[in-house]
Length: 537
Image (cartoon, rainbow, N blue to C red):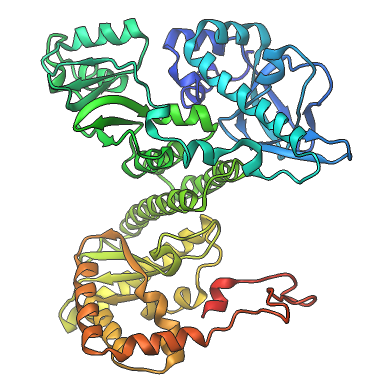
């Protein structure tokens, strides 16, 4: 191929499963065999019933719809695939007429690996064979289910059964049991030789009794050994990553994915009575689900501009859309979205602080916390939903209050603009336009909470209810712990508060019709629109 810079392709493929498992020289060779193709939105790339694909396609930018033709003439949606996903493997490996139609859902850029080199990779590389065997099984299962249920409309859950993998499968069913381990005193060179012989990218470091102490990865060898000039006879205990997290073999697969996302790691040690029995990786989960949010979450920390940060929610939405169509449970989806939103918010806080310092406004004048309220406070935030928040800064003497409040008001305004650019279009205008409402000192917030508990009009209390669903996304102070203690003590002394809160909640009537179904406008500016969050107010 030639006109497209090869290093850029290699860098991209190093983040794509299963190409990320390839050695540098082999990946470089494969990159040289690839071409770059452009498909405009709506173009059919593979047509069901026609000749099999001649290439494996790796999506660089854009997305495709994978559909199955039905006798009625309708197209049954099987999957939506986005950046880093592949398609074309099924018909290519089977060598039969294409089963699915693949259509560009938006303008698409994809790398193409020709059929023969791809088949060779699958034949000779165990990781490729495993990955595309799972992919093949999922697609064939989708066809079988379509045939079995041709009289009903297929849902994402019926199609590929992600819940069977994430919420039905246990960690011990997906983990790697063929363990590569070494003792902490093992020389680095010896550990690297073992990794090379087994063709793996990591080795677990364990005590003689089997308790895991850490993990040594290819990255550790590059950064902590080669780049740092460390001698090859140094013990692995000196250079290994010690932040290895553990999980039970009986935990659900979705719990493993959440733990990886939460801690920003790619591996979890699977332990039983503190003894290592296996390892599960993001790679293992991606192999059976086809998508994983962990990679997108890790990219949040690398972003250096608001423009780049604003592009990540779109990528996460594609991953979540795919997982949703595959049947991901509500609990799992909400956990993943909340974790991503928290990481995005924390990164935005850092970028906003840097921007304000660059503009000569200086760093935060005192310590502060950023609180999530309402649905975000309950970790129940959905896609594209607005964020209610509170900025709580440390108490200052009265003569400094105006200066401090001015800084944090500007900080809050910039944060809301940043969240809006990241897709949180529904952010409360009342909060955005009234900095006094969201940005106050610890003493001012405490006064408000105690006033709400002590009395007040039911309607005002209903408006304030969301402030009791709070948690700290970013905290430099212990305000949350302190305020909860005071809230509980105040409620104990004002037992009527819970009755008033209940009455305030009962005044919010859902818009139901005669048959107790939701009723919405049939014309006008609110045609077919229903905002349950606003209804609750």
